[in-house]
Image (cartoon, rainbow, N blue to C red; front, side, top):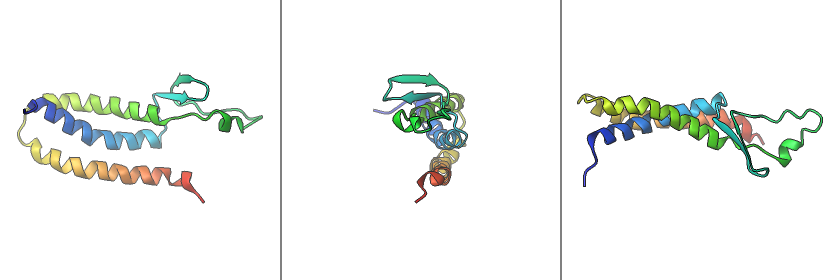
Length: 121
C-alpha cells in the first residue's frame, strides 16, 4: 500500500518545520495554553505565577507549558506544511532529505542550549 504523494510532502514538510518552531516557542515562551494539573485548570497563553507575597505557591501549583509549546509548534508546522503539500515540483526531493536531517538536529541543539539554565547544579 502506498501513500498519496501529497501526504508524503505534507509529512516531510511538517517534520522539517516542527523542530525549529518548537525551539522558537520554547525560547520565547509562546505556549498556546498553560495547564495546572494539580488544580485542573487550563488557561490560554503562557501564564507565570505572579504571587509576590508567597512565591512558594508556584511550587504547590506548578504550571505545565510543554503541552502549549507543542501545540503552538504543531499549528505553525501545519501552516507551513499545507502549502508544501500542494507544491508539485520534482526538485524538492533533495531539499526534503537534507532538511529532514539538518533542521531537526539543529533544533535539538537549540533546545538543549535554551534549557541549559534550568539544569544548574
